[in-house]
Amino acid sequence: MSLQLKEYKTTQGEIILYNGTPNFEKLEVLSQSFGDIWHSSFEQGYKNAFPEIVYQTITFYTRDFDNLNECVSWRINPNQFAVRKSVWMTLNGFDNDFSNKQMQAIDFGYRAIHFGAVPIYVKGLFESNGQETIAIPPKDRYAFFIKKYKTDHALFMIYRVGFWKISEWNAFFYAKKNFKLKDDIPVMEPRKLNAIKGNPTVSYIIPTMMRQDYTLKLLSDLSNQTHIPTQVVIVDATPESERNESLYNSINFPFEVIVKWQETKGSCRARNEAIQLCTGDYIVFGDDDIRIPSNYIENHISFIQTYKVDACNGLDVRADNQNQNLNDLSHKLTNMGKYRYLSGVAQIFNNANNCVKREFVNQLVGNDVNFDGGYGEDNDFGLSLIKSGVVVLQNPFSANLHLKPAIGGYRFWGNQANILGKKRKKQPWELDTPVKWIRPIPSPTVVYFYIKHYEPQILKEYRSKYLVLYLFKGPIFALPLRIVKLPFRKLQFKKAVFYADKLIKLGKRTV
Image (cartoon, rainbow, N blue to C red; front, side, top):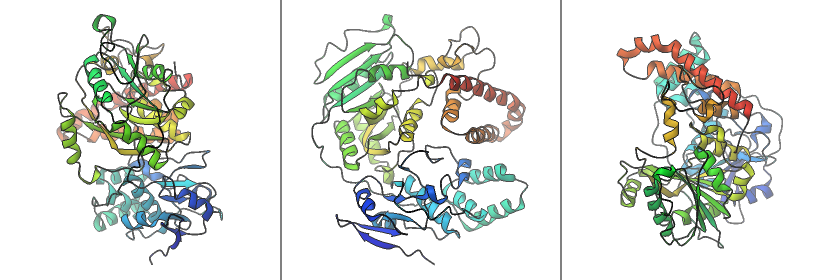
């Protein structure tokens, strides 16, 4: 039996479909903002429902967040939710391949978050009638994985749930027989961007190291913007013997240029030093090795104003080589197909291309410098924004071409992590315990990210999947050797946890 939804017409003439009894006054206000689907499922038993998603991936939205009145959440209660009719029709509503109505709603929310719609938990939009019991049949659980991902993920779920359980294998073979990977899911069209209101000021941050020539190209692109930034703050860590200190002052730019020669180490510290100098209403973060089209800044501000959000993540396009230019970017964007204008909820945060209202950057007091020398600082900053209540959307209108030259940049320091012995230069995360003969893998800062933001179970699942992938991804003839090496790889992972725990004890640092 198909779901029968009621209709509510907003003062703007838009049709909202709903089930249950929402607060229509609140729904009217919500309809004029960034959300597309609204629910109050946390108080109704759905908070962190379908925890099995961790067997596929760990993203910003693996877990629901605490102490927020509004936040992104794809765990929808089918009995009490509201949705824009246009979104419901584009995404084809609930999927009747699932026998369980709760799974249908969760699947709908999950599709929405990946294909351009924004599902939002709103405290008090629907009254709580008590906690529902979430009971998703194994067949629906495996159907979800088979329809969305490669079979490997469903097999990994069997391994984690219990490979000795006949019921799990029966559900897997049922799903495998009746369903297949579905890749023709429609994508929501983004909203038409409004013209910028007022005269918002923009500070642009460039951390750079041994890439002054690339930084000059980026400054040239910034000079040609349709919305000129107010100031550009450059924090340059190029060694004194290799830099030209007069380079940035030799050209007249249509914005204030502030140059700070970095004496500390690390890109997180560089960004924090730059943040202290910013005065704009918005801060745009960029890497030193990118090229940006003339409407880049304008589209960031216009996107944030149009969607009424506080932060957005731009489209980061990888160049084929470091000699490509904006013509190549245009060509790449044309060939992206239906995903060219995919907007909605940002799945990652990329310090090469994002825009945040300065008040929220200041609220976080900058980047966590515990990530210097490693990886994960981008997502840490993004997830910290999200957990504070900021909604971060994906902005497909502000694209950059990421050149990724082989030399220069802050990874010069981080690359030392692959070296052992006397030639190794100590990494910031080593603190008072230098690495000797057991190199931690993965990077301790990656492990630190999971410990910092999630409960222990998430790290446990990350470790399990990491080791399984180590064993079975790669040439089959090398499997015996990987099996022999597995105990040492476990020891390396344990070493990564050791360093991550030391960072946890220090707590977040910004200097």
